[in-house]
Image (cartoon, rainbow, N blue to C red):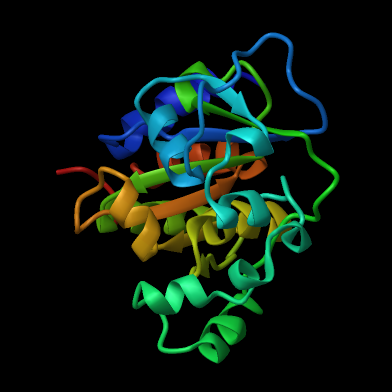
Length: 228
């Protein structure tokens, strides 16, 4: 399937300012894609891809515990106890105390560690591989239309992400559930990414994108979504 053409039409229909990002989990390091130089956080990797970079990353290129843990690149047990406790989040003021951190983390989905060796990132318009998840930063109106397009022929509801990190809510969650997921980002991603206060996030399981694009095209002929 040519996701470059589908991505171009998707961006055109919604008038997206930001390039959607294609993400793929890989059991081995790809031979035809450059490895990321240096280390960065998962959220910064998304931003790099939005700006046009195509690359893959392993656990060695991930500098955030959450990014490595929730994407399955590292086992949480590999981290020291003081990190696994979440105490650093109480020091940052994200949670009041460690029990609150631990309760919150119970709801964060993660890919099983030990399966995948690498994550591949690319702007959707340059993705010459079959992606697993498509990540989008958009405005509320555009997000609403994506959710309506998902429900248009299926009646399916999207999942609303909570306060968890986007490596879980916008990557692992749609991957594991097969559900369109929307959210507002978390304190970490909004601190490290160049996004506007009013921006929202949507992630689409890649297999649903052709259907959603087709639905958007049909919806444009209907009164509720017809452009004036």
